[in-house]
Image (cartoon, rainbow, N blue to C red; front, side, top):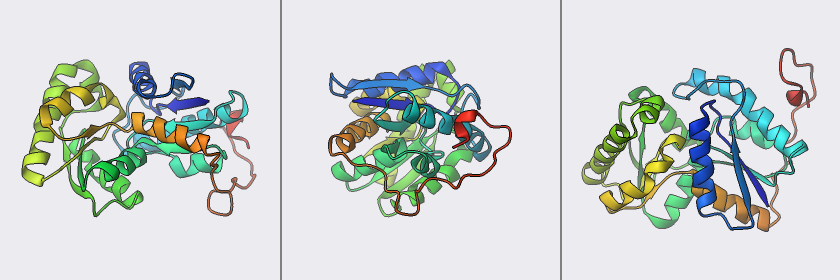
Length: 244
């Protein structure tokens, strides 16, 4: 089985961390590898960033489907950018890490809080919760006030900010599980779980395990209507991979 993780931004260190997190609980015979597009923003913290990242993400989905023999895909950004579009261009399972984290959290806790990056990103996280129908399970969305690249530059400061913000979600909001609202947080899971005493979840690891499950069951993306292949039309200025 081959599972491709796509980090939609262009920062290689985040891609490598996502790969490590994806490989951590995968079966030994499952090949898990991560890539990032050649084009796009170095981090995703706004709708502008997200939309710019989607063409490169879709190119990697199509390449994996046509040329690399990939069995399932994971989109390693907590906004799940381009998720519906990605499901249109392949029959293979495509999982977003927010979707996977939310689904898994609901199996082990009655509620959760999301701890994320900049204050401005809160509205994006709210949209993801609505997108996956989890409003009734989400106790709160809290932000650290740090950017994705702040965490890359100073992981120790980032871990401290995540711990403080997560503790407030547990103590003040009643959160019984913490979801880390950025793929760049995968390296902090174990330290936070020890400190907080509640489940702490990144989305990459559960997404890979769910992908394994779907491939094992022979499950494919429904092409009945909503996620059927896009209509063929002329596209100008895009990669040849996007010319379906």
